[in-house]
Length: 200
Image (cartoon, rainbow, N blue to C red):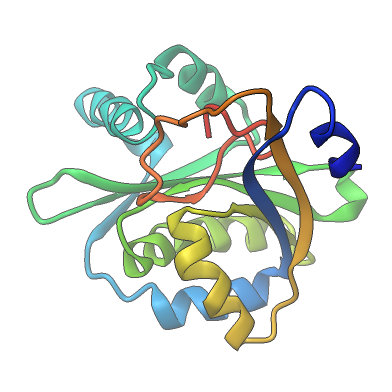
């Protein structure tokens, strides 16, 4: 399908997208092994006013767009859970979110986004989310997408390959002209908007 569209109006290839699905136990084992940071994790719902403002600023620093209005609606959803990681100076250095997706009978939970500066912080910030999801649904499976040319593709994909965790190629974004996504790809492990990923 992509060659057909490339030959017409959208000849420029953008990021490739890879999908991963795994039991909560598998993701938990990976997170326990690699999420070894001693930094403090706090759930978004427990942030005070100043900490929440800091979260909005952190999001802006990664995405390079003001998503404060969107984030307020997103966090107000009863089924959305989020976590942030504070460094020693009490500054947010990572964040992640999870919410159910598809029918309840599928037991699927989408992990997105995940922003962090390194693997240790990335897996540390998702650990409480895994715990919360497994309590909510003991049969839970996690679904997430990784984009090429990001921290996720550079650090997560090789790790999952070593563990024989299968990946599925989902697609490629095609553009009519060159598009330079302003997001900080060095902190993008998992994009937020995984189908369009313009806002990531």
